[in-house]
Length: 67
Image (cartoon, rainbow, N blue to C red; front, top):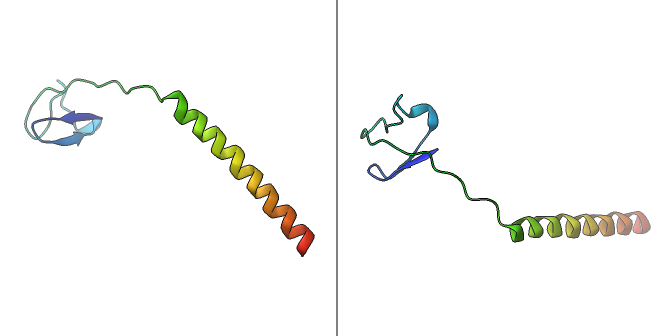
């Protein structure tokens, strides 16, 4: 997806002309590269999965012992 500064909106790849222009205003849009996902975001996801897995284990064992 590309951002059109003139229209101030996101333009889907399917909406672009053959030349890569915005269908609304005709401005030629460049393909923008996405920045890589930061390492600390990945680390936070891993930590969250481990924590939630541990809490699920605690909840299941609590239910088993108290049921």
